[in-house]
Length: 189
Ligand code: UDP
Ligand code: MG
Image (cartoon, rainbow, N blue to C red):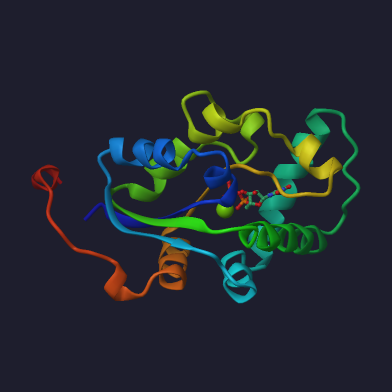
């Protein structure tokens, strides 16, 4: 069984820039099925639970950001992945609460992988044209965001693993908000 569910958040910058329709269209056009969708203005508890500070996530964020800084010859002064993770988590949770976001659950074959591909690299500047971050936010970079001590405004969140997808869907949706219905395309999968 290759069917998966994944959570997308269209962050507040997507809404502020009038990109909701375009971003949702991208996901619809993949053939994946929208099985849940709503507008939510997260409180602090939800935001903190969403960007949970575990060591693996912190190390990953630290390494990605450090590598990019080094490649560009920019100073990266943080030494401790957990300390850096804590900082990003607090920026993230503030950003998530800047205004309402759109939460979407998509379902279909390889949904987690397909969606991450469409979303593109975390840093929009590195995201390929054709991806959501590449097409709509490419002027955004680590260099600018970190120098201004603010979050990378990259339009979309997408679950990255089956474990995180399950955890995040349960966090943002109750079971009766996820809808099970058939579409013509289902017979092929
Ligand atoms: N982020 C940031 N600065 C950083 C690293 C991450 O602002 O140096 C933000 C960015 O908005 C990103 C989010 O933290 O989307 C979560 O980071 P993650 O590594 O999980 O990236 P994603 O899965 O969103 O591509
Ligand atoms: Mg992530």
